[in-house]
Image (tube, rainbow, N blue to C red):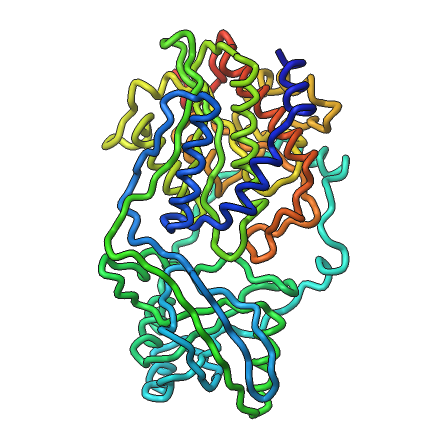
Length: 485
């Protein structure tokens, strides 16, 4: 079967068909945007076309109102003309038409700063960030794949000593980001400009701490002014001109479409039904949501394409797994693993939380396999500290060492959807992926041109094999000792 999986995945691959359609046609997919809803409709239909069973969208929370950026145009028009590379921050309002505004640098850190600027910012374009420092090392050398020495270092067993975390004590003198934006909105500023990148031409992410909580309301009444994230070199140029005492004038037009009622965010699910209902489930997946400034070819269109291709391979080969194979395409990952955490809590429970407890399905899940962290090829797999799974996961690696899949590390990774499983004691694994040049996740430059097709083909093939082994194994994937009865 592994030979058949390799043949289908490496010689008859459709992974780039998925990747290209997701990137070029569907585009960016901010959680609970109309763009995301359109993309999820396509993904559901694609899973049905494969012949998967129990295909469904599963709501998991009242997420807010929809938000889509429909148009942005930003220019410096004085003292010189320069079109700005800029993107509206998620969940902020538009400008309600074209506005021309004088730019001003405003440093708001304390209540005294608010008092000093009160009544002086009406109609202004406010620069609130410090100038960006450019990372010239990355600019000249780019990103390289892992060397053999680096992989060996990752393979070493690590022991993290327990330590008490320092208390986070609020400084009563400093204002919060929420207070800063509320003040700027109350002052009726025309637009706020910020930058937080360190590479030329790149605008990272397009959100800010607290944007979900302080930026939304059911009636569309936002608590922030229009906010633009600007590429570092354009922001720095305006900043330097203003520091010379020379006026800067901007022309900005931002159109953001917002819903009028709170809606639920959803995850997508599909299955290859197992032959033994008592054997349980093995899962694979990736987060389908992205930021909105690019199609996000690497983060995480690539993971979505790989997961879809992996389950397509297995369905095409007509596998009859003992355990049900379930694919999940999450949303809400970029904002804090909302989709996967809600799914795990609902379906499996949490043995660490007496209020939640565990569900019968908790004992039926064998493992969850995830792709995130870019589009680089798999070089190994992280155990998340689960040494009891080393022997099994190492054995499944053997047929793929010629593809560069050579490393099992006990180290843990955070900040993506396998963590939702690992946190409650369920085996959740993220593959160790190469760092590859050309991809720029969480930025405006994450397009198809940065993807290397052979990497995704290898990944989908390896993921399909791991999922197949987990679905057919007489034993489920071992769990961490602390969660083993």
